[in-house]
Length: 98
Image (cartoon, rainbow, N blue to C red; front, side):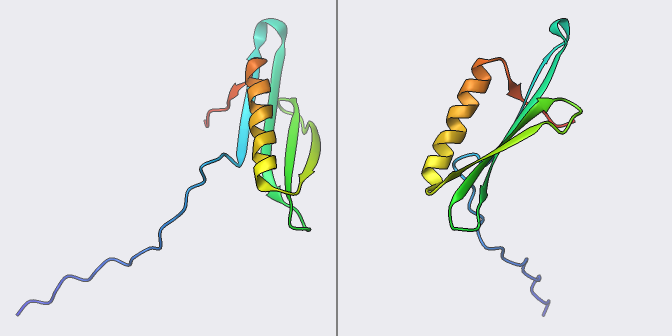
């Protein structure tokens, strides 16, 4: 009697986030010598809240960084979405890997 084939290990389901927790944008316009980046990320803080970390500057530099603290994750996601809308309106596009 042949042995049954070994079963593959079962992985627990992975919950995907419905809302983005990070975003990386760029704005490149060689005609005006504009080479800019803008990144946003949500990170937990030490007191149980959420921090929205924004970093921006010229591509190739460290740039500037500002951190805004929120008590609720929903408020932080709203702020991230608001910043994304504003930056995309100003000509920033999602950074592509490569």
